[in-house]
Image 1 (cartoon, rainbow, N blue to C red):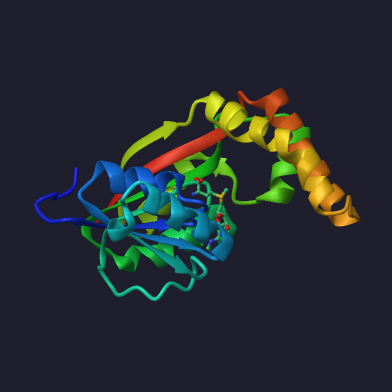
Image 2 (cartoon, rainbow, N blue to C red):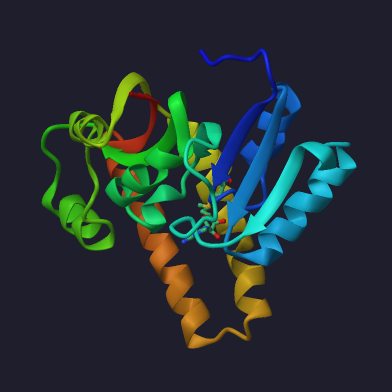
Length: 217
Ligand SMILES: C[S@@+](CC[C@H](N)C(=O)[O-])C[C@H]1O[C@@H](n2cnc3c(N)ncnc32)[C@H](O)[C@@H]1O
């Protein structure tokens, strides 16, 4: 749904170690700028890119997603998976708008309520962890208010959360604690993650990761 006559310019915001960056560079005729504020993650991304012969197509940029040195209308696509919440959905979509060409695409995932009402325990937890959590219609409203029109929305399947995220994280707790000398801070992090996993397992029908695809006006 984008003009592919020339190589696409894509920004992957909060790219981490580059799971989506690498795929985008592999599948599309594109130059991908991968943004993260942790250089350690970008180092992993750069070696993955090199191993796959994609170094020419990927450039890593170590900076915060809310202070990128991009020009107006520089990109065809802004991609961001599981990361925009770090600066807030509304702030992110508003600030990134100007970096997209007219008719450019925003593809962004965001935690989303799937039901109109939800148990008090769950509501309280997420309202304190991430007050911007909301239903898809509100998220789409935010996109519309900020110069986009929605062209797609879907919910990531539960296994993405459970098998691709929670289980590998659970498997790494022991090693993480050992590496950090079992410190109080490390234990607090593990306990917080365990709580998040426990709530997801209990209430997964009420929320999930929504993926929003929107075009700029
Ligand atoms: C949950 S990870 C998602 C990584 C990747 N998009 C993926 O799907 O595998 C969130 C990423 O956002 C990055 N991040 C958090 N706050 C950031 C900020 N203000 N600017 C840039 N990156 C940030 C973290 O370092 C982390 O790599």
